[in-house]
Length: 222
Image (cartoon, rainbow, N blue to C red; front, side, top):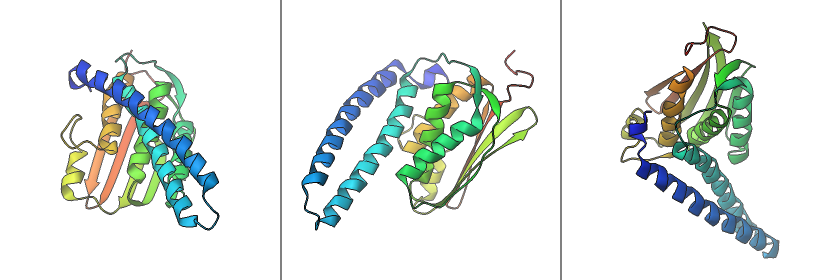
């Protein structure tokens, strides 16, 4: 994504939203902690509702981290990173948000050129967005030539053909969603690393693949 796609006004709005929602989440954590202690043991349904609310708040926090990256300057910190480890951390975060979601993982250590903060924030945001409403999530990475590719494949329900079309469009658009944010972040910084983004949709399936240059290969930006 070029700077023209992320105006100063949008950056300012992202900063404001992040701080405002972070304050709201902190208050929500405090209230749920107090209520869960004070509710009688017999009120299991109410406690479950509070636990679900807290889980949703944690999910919002993951996307807020991604939103903060959208508001960050275009400059990136390009250094050697482990793609497999970033995917594993993102998978762990997603499993905490969706403990009952069937999730298959086939990741291996691959040293790539990447911005460490953006790599972790965007992979976590992407997996959390892909997991919402999914019946199965598959995460893997592999080497193709001089690039490492990460692949996230989602099977699910509830996505309309129009919603599937939206994920193909560059951000911003009128139909904001967590997945649109995640893809916007990837479009923003992957080219600065020498990487590439591919999004494929079919029926209710969504597949997101992105590449990063291997650290021990010829650097495409040099």
